[in-house]
Length: 216
Image (tube, rainbow, N blue to C red; front, side):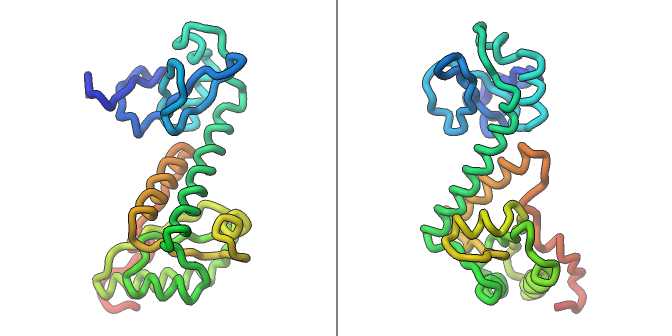
């Protein structure tokens, strides 16, 4: 990746990486350091691999001040702030998918979206009951038996957070239908979860353990 235009060097590992695997940080007012997730803030930026552990190491070792060649207040909570902003961006992407008409809620509608091969992403609330998860897993197993497209599955937020963004109460399960806004949502969730060291969204087909012999 040497000399690749879209590559930058992580100040922690000193490895050159694609920009989508990094987070840009810039010095702002009062010499405070800010995550620049949109990569559009003015000023000189430095890049850190998009993982909580890398941001924590950069703060602990004073690498931001060293790289920027100036006294800078990175803040001990920088890793937490960055994670919160990535979570917020993923929630915003969920809201945009809803505005695009690509999100359905309510168990029956979600189940139908999966079985009709319309769903690209199944979102469970963190506090969703095991029975609902199991039944929607059966819908995915049915879809695989019918040779439909895979459905990604993610478990990111409590029901309260999902309900607030989707504008309806007590959301335990939601399905995002295929479309550009859903692709952006999946990318935002993946970036946030990768930062936190989690693996999501995952293949619904893999989660069902469907063998291809009989089944739902």
